[in-house]
Length: 420
Image (cartoon, rainbow, N blue to C red):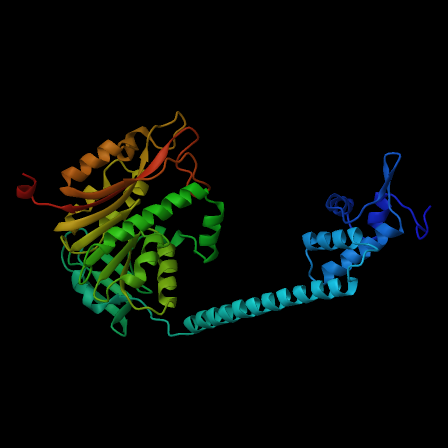
């Protein structure tokens, strides 16, 4: 045994003594910064290895990376007993490292300052005035009975800052609606069974949904918003079928003109409450009317809608209905209104398909295009998404073997004489 080699141990014991894993020691060996002697198929670690390990630990504590430590060991070992100035080399090494650390600290301080400013911005937003959204009194004239199309009369209305928060809407035919927390709803007990929606559900949805499906939604969303940007929405009325938790509206909300009215319709009362709360907390005032009703019972005046947004509303309706939804709401759209639609298209239906045979025509690209022509929508632009074969927990309407994509349509109604 050479002078100074007072201990010898194998890799397992060496790792245990130094409180690291065997894999860590093997990694140091691969880098050449610990070089044990191999005896009879086993590596033996001596005092020299122990000293090298302590030096590695010391350098790591000062922020050196393993590739930097490796370079140091090369200089230390290869330059041993030569005339190079060891103290000068160490000083240069540590000085350069210190300068690097100082720069990193400065960079981190700048990042921290930016984060602090962003957090302050969020805190100010969260503490700002919350604008309560109800049914603005000016929109009451837009409401009409879905049964007979007669005007609705407000009764027992609770009004705050020109917003009706509570009350009843009645028609001479006897049909009634209620206003609860600023949301118009049809008097149906089933609406009260909806489960509350919480903020984390959006994050949960993103986490467990197939990334390709989410990417299709994102691309379709960007495409649709660009189409809306091409329209002058001032003093216009926009109606969305199936607003849900507001994926579409939340991306459009801040850019809506002050004099534009957006009507968000969904049959799920809790989703509308969730969406309404989100928009109120932004502190940004835009005109939004929330209606909880079946799509065929929307209580607004006929031929009043300038832009109809059907972001898979028809497709979701078609899971349980044979009729083509857009024909059922066509009387609400103006003679020269626009349609921005997105439809689920099935290239094929599997033997275990979840779509009943009588509902399948509404998922055919050829049939949908025929219906849009019958509704006098002239194509301005359209787009097909990538084909999907899986959606996820919340998008399980197609089964293995079925190919599904989204067809996006942007068009404008034309008169019969224009078509001829």
